[in-house]
Structure formats: structure tokens, C-alpha cells
Image (cartoon, rainbow, N blue to C red; front, top):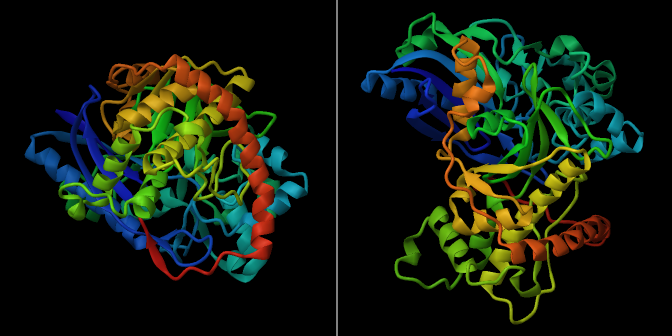
Length: 520
């Protein structure tokens, strides 16, 4: 079978898959690396780890394809958004990758918003002004080390970093990744002069922007290592979020994709760039005429992982002593099924890693409200899951405010394998939720976009129709009614928390953490 290889560079792993024109996966691999947290608000990756992982994922998937007798006709790329790193003129990294989770630029983001520029920049760029964005990150460099900012030949994201390892060609980035920088005008299709001035960079320091279907060349050494013909097309591809929609079939109007991994997101596809007056939704490109709008949340499966570390002591079951983190997470979620909807009056604000959508205001912290002696571990874990799903419902409510109808939800990611997660999500959204047949939706989306770039899938709706989805989980009417009544309390409590945190930090600032590796 002819196949396209999709390489998806994520925050803690690079995944490689191969898929035929029928959309079915033929091979898959995963290469992991640690996320480093060397100081307060910092979240970084080693750029060499990312480049090595991309090459290894490609060579391993290509080897699996050869073993099965499949012929690789193209390689297509996906990468996570909002990363930033300095590079030299030849594409060699000069420092760590500053990821989306890095919050050092909170002060710069607040200053931009306070100057009355937040909504104007978001309306042009599609990216909320937030510490995650490269715009704010560069403004941080401008404030703290302007000489390095000015003298660095290239400021890049993850896609440019991966291309430096895989591609033999010019310094370019795809429209999708560019649309997530906060520096690119989606309507004028150029780097935004005002954003560049705020960031303190010149257009010459940034990559040229090309369509997501652009064909490049593999480096001869990479092609040889992977056992691929030298002329195998390398499709530049898109960002992970829009590709996840394609990979779960959430491209037609009214169909929403939800990612439930370490973090989460809710997105739908529209046919032109669109932003909302309230500034609650992002807008990133899939192709030149398909755009993903939605919101990302910082906390999803990571909340249960934290609960496993914080609450698992004394969790006595046969064999529990040797459990790994995934097994412990699954056991806690299973236990949480014993708690009722609403967790007996316990409300969780799950902002352990701060929060993004729908408010895009840094500094949020987590909390439990209504805690009583009668509450046990099952209540605490279920309330955390409910808090995450309620946050996604708040993003969906932003869709409704802009007239974007949602009729169907397709979920993907590790948490989507859990019956409790899916049932709570369906009731919080009050919508049927189908789970994609493959957990590798983003990498599959890269494959499908590769087939589209080759001309074999001219219609992306046709590509989406190839994706299998299980039977939809229907919302429970009584649970849905309860969550709808609770949701205004979530928003009210979260907004109050923002003010409380400022006072907490003034009275008792958080301690400086030691260098550590974050859990994947």
C-alpha cells in the first residue's frame, strides 16, 4: 500500500504514524523526551532532543512500512504551537525551546493588554495576548536581554526547528504555525508591523510564511537513514490543533473536536479567519481556506496525574505497589465513578497550571470549594474531572455567543479512553460525544493533509469522512441540568480567584522550585 508518514512533534513526545489513502493507520511509533522546569514559570525543552526524536520517529516508521511492504509517498509534519527559541543563521539552536506552558512573559502580556492593544492585536493575529504567545515571549526578551534579542539571527518555533533537522531548503514556516505566534496578520497575510515593534524583532529574523501544503525536500542524509528515495516530498504541514480536527473528522460545519490529553482544547473549522469581540477564541489556519477557531485549556489529564501523586497514598489494592503513573490514573478515575454527579457539592477549579481559554488571563490557581469532612478521594478526583469538562463547556459557550452552532463532538486523547471522562464531558456539554477510533488524531491529520497536498484528497471534508468514530455517548439529562446550573458558579469563582491570587502572592509568594523534570 502507498502511505504518507505523519510526524507530530508534541510537548513530551514525537509520534510517527503511516496512513494509506483510506485513512487507516499502518504503523505507529512514539519517542519521548522530558519537559524541563528549571525555575518559576519556566517550561522548556532541549532542542536537540526534539530534532533527534523527529529523525528517529521518521526512520522507525519508515522501517515498519518497509517491513510491511508499504511504499512511502510523502512525509507530512505537525508541531505544537506557541514555542520560541533562538537559532543561528544556519538553523542551529542557540538555546532551549520555550514552550507554550512557560509563563515568564505574564508581566509583558499584562502590559500589552493594559495599553489597550490586546483585542486589536488578537483581531488581526487570531492569537490572544497571553504569556504563551511568542509575541509576549519576545517582549520578555526585549525587556530582559535586548542585545540577545536583536543580535539573534533567527527566532523560530518548533516547526522551524524540526525543518532544520529534516529539510534541505529555505528558512520557512507554514501559515498554520505562523498564525499562532501573535505576530502574523491573518487578513493581510504578512508579519504584523505593530506586533513586530512590540516584540522588538525584525521581519528578517523570522521565517518566510508558506502554505501548509508546501512541498520541501528531505535532507539527503535523512532520506538515506530512513531508506526513502531522495525525491520523497516533505509536506510542511500545519499546527497540532487544526490537524487534530482533521484527524478526528471534525471538519464539516457544526462538528467540534475536543482534545483530552495532558492539556485540552475545543475547536471547530470555519472557512475564513474569524475572531470574537470578547477575545475568548483563537483562530489558527489549517489551510488557506480552512481555519480552526476555539480555545485551549492548560489542565486536563494533568489534573488526574496530580491527584494520583497527591491522593494515592494508602490506595490499597492487590498489586498497587508496582503501578506506573498511567495505571494509577486509571484506577483513580475508576474509583471516582463511585461519587455522584456534582461530587456531593464539591466544586474544583482545576487551574494547577494556570489557565488559558476562555479568559486568557495569567495567574489563575487551583482550588476546591465546598470541601467537607464527608468528601473522600473519589469526590476529589471526580470534582477535578468535572472542573475540566466545565472549562471546556465555557469555551463552547463562547461559540454560541458568536453564532457558531455545535451539533456533534468528537473526542481524542488519552483521557477520552475513560468512560467517566466521556460521560461527564457529554453531560457538561449537553451534546453527544463520539470518541475517535485512533488516539493518534493529530499525526493522522498530518497524514491526511499530506494526501491532500499530493492531490489525492482534493476535499478535506472527504478526508474527514475517512476517520472512524465510535458510537456517541449521550448526555444524562439530569446531570446536564446540574452542570448547567453549576457552570456560572465556576466562572464567578474563577474570576474572583484572579484577584485573590494577587493578594496571596503579595503576602506569601510561592517558593523557588529546584530544577526538575516535569511529568509527561
